[in-house]
Image (cartoon, rainbow, N blue to C red; front, side, top):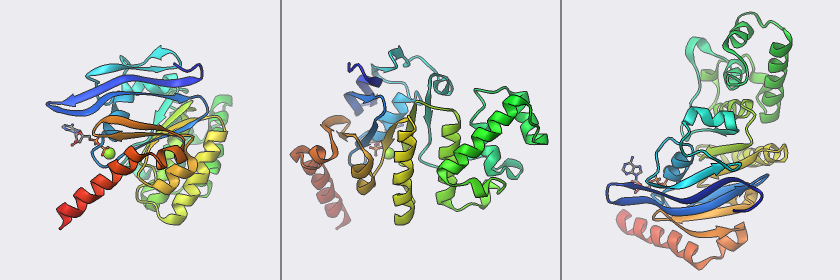
Amino acid sequence: MSELALLSVEGLSKSFGDLKAVQNVTFNVDSGKIVSIIGPNGAGKSTLLNLITRVLAPTKGKVSFINQDIISMKTKDLVKVGISRTFQSVRLFHVNEMNVLENILVGFHHQYNHRMLASCFRFGRTRKNEAEMLERAYEIMEMVGIRHFAQTPVKELAFGNQRLVELGRALAADPRLLILDEPAAGLNDVETEQFSKLIKKINQAGVSILLVEHHMGLVMDISDKIVVLNYGEKIAEGRPFEVQNNPAVIEAYLGKEAETAYVGN
Ligand code: ADP
Ligand code: MG
């Protein structure tokens, strides 16, 4: 294991009946880095993220975070050790017209107690910790570019901005590792470009990032390292240009395209 490893995945496997969705996958996310997982449809990317974040239990293998075994932890407790994630489908709180600020405040829940959160919601009161929390919420909204929407109900926002609220809420947990599942899915070209800059900014602020993403331009632009899966197995790992020129990777993608073309015909 590398000395810098923040997240270490070792021999992780998951079978669904006879199907080996993830097979013996090993890789690290080193501290301060952006790592992307790519691969054709059905390669096992989502399953791998779900194993790491304990949404699914592995058939075998180890996952550690800062040298602590996290395989036996519950998903909701990962945030306490410094792992925060977003989901492929946006999950925000709309009840009672909850606005952007309130959604960001929910992200603080493991750091601050519920009474404090409740009083922030009801009175905007400014005892020391509450004031700190609000200040931090505004900093986060500023960083992800949604500060001007603070009082807007999230259900009134366009999809791209809802994604930013979700990202902001994940950041409110003050993670060391942020895990993103297809964060650019559904974004237009301009939004994708802005998103790419934002990811780099978050990373420069000291947050390591692990993401699954289909948008190759984005992946090649932001990744320090890319892990390539095919039929559940890791077939390549390296810097973007290394992976791009790897014959096994090219074959995996072309093979799938040929299959799809055939099925399509
Ligand atoms: P990717 O995210 O790379 O497209 P997935 O991780 O979603 O791939 O799926 C990997 C393989 O595992 C696919 O063949 C998929 O059909 C299968 N699979 C995923 N989840 C389940 C499940 N809950 N039960 C059975 N098979 C599953
Ligand atoms: Mg998937």
